[in-house]
Length: 342
Image (cartoon, rainbow, N blue to C red; front, side, top):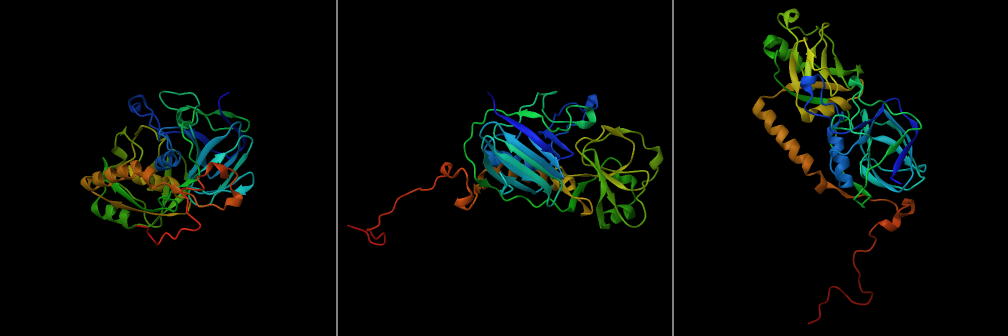
């Protein structure tokens, strides 16, 4: 019998996500996938498996889960209060979930999107080359209480590992490049945009996140005459009321609102993870700068596996104590190591 994960209780927006399905923009489908792609790479590093394995994405809060077999898990993304059989466990770490044990994941302490990774990945059916739920395209659906998720074969064994997470859960400065209509905003408007302190509006989801600010709205020249054209995640549209919207992973594929800029892919997780009310500001970088930033981000993601370290835990609270390497050498009780025999 294959390993399975049963959902005993569930938050309002828990879905299966992976790296998404590229190649369907011409058919009207954006890539979708995890809102925080870096979290998938972190989970893969902790479990020693490919980053394209599907995981559970939890918005704001998680739920409670029970395994029918021993399985490895990892927790990444927005930190959430978590217990294993009512004993608190660490976030940004890997653990052993024993058969019959209850994993409870509560509300987010910071950020928005938390991720539960399973050794072997979640193996729900493939749809158009991916397992990712794309709600806007009716591919998959939010998970419900009582569902049982199939788990793939886990070829790893290591647990009790941790990883220092990049701080991206409280807003901050977002780097952007010029977009198709940037030049239709005059210099004064662009300078006001980059000097304006925004806050993340409560209105936001996997399609887009609205920014709120004090002061005059932002407008482009000939805004009403702009024709609809292709848009992509990261584009910052200026809506009819002058408020900026950052388009996210499940955005539409065409639009007619002017775009003042486009968020760099490596900063999209910071936008997605910003909770309502978090401060946001924007900074233009040119294309050569953006290229260097993205190249460095790719290198850093690929190097995450070398940054994983053992998790320091109290032996009294470790249920899987015997799976740890407790002794890695031997010393003599009578020989003085400071002396050396000829």
